[in-house]
Length: 273
Image (spheres, rainbow, N blue to C red):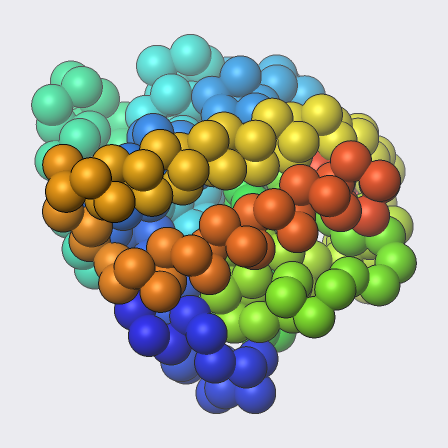
């Protein structure tokens, strides 16, 4: 994907499509496994527990990807989950994964745009959005949509990369944005977006160690891929230049995470009953 190395000065549609294409790729699964966010399914479990999910809840999973989190929530809490993702390929893969897991009765996946959800108002008890809000061009519109589709008393749970202070130029590229870095916000800024959309009882949990662990895992995967590609035992799904650029970005991100400029947080809030 040559667009990774262009600037952030792109149309919102280009940014969304780049994100969708990357996270639908086998390359990302090679690096990250099946759960694409810091903390993996343990963090998803924490989010579900903090939101007090149960069998009576209908959950909307925004940017649901290939369905890993939605399937886990259905299996762990017995809740119904509707997943929405910008990529039709992800929707197809998630639907197949739900059927394979025997959870298709509880799970539905649809294609859609988080900033303009084609879903009825007041239809869900809970909205979750894991490590995706920071990639949305219009975050305020997305959070407003979260509020619109929730019933009175509904809950929202957002997990995302946070940033504190200036980042080096390498972490302000389109590729860095797709990797949930360049357009990340401070935790209190996410909380402010939630409050402005009409939520209350906002709580922030910091999990910076999860960001460090994921970045280190990505760096190790990239280094291994570089070595294997160099000796001809790995056929890269990306250009060699993209691999080198990704490793440079990961190294910069690791430094930023270790000095506290990058982190990870859960933001929990509720609609007034």
